[in-house]
Length: 72
Image 1 (tube, rainbow, N blue to C red):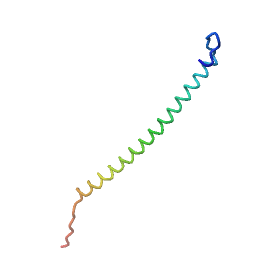
Image 2 (image 1 turned 90 degrees about the vertical axis):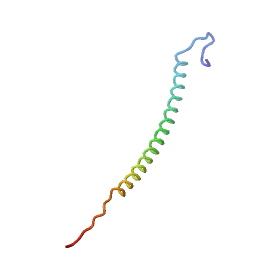
Image 3 (image 1 turned 180 degrees about the vertical axis):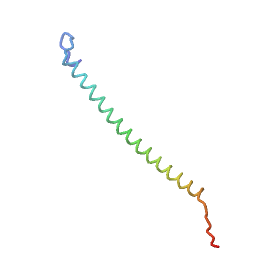
Image 4 (image 1 turned 60 degrees about the horizontal axis):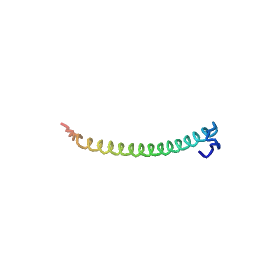
């Protein structure tokens, strides 16, 4: 390790520094993953809304009835 003394001992400061590095890397990966998840979620929501809209239009056309009103 770069912070190790000449005797090869590891100080608590060395451990803190390494844990700080690992924590920083983990936080960067989490932020990246959050952005990807939000993007995928928004795209999925838009696709679901478009599909629901199209299915609703189709169902409305298929089941609409023609009503004839006669006066006697």
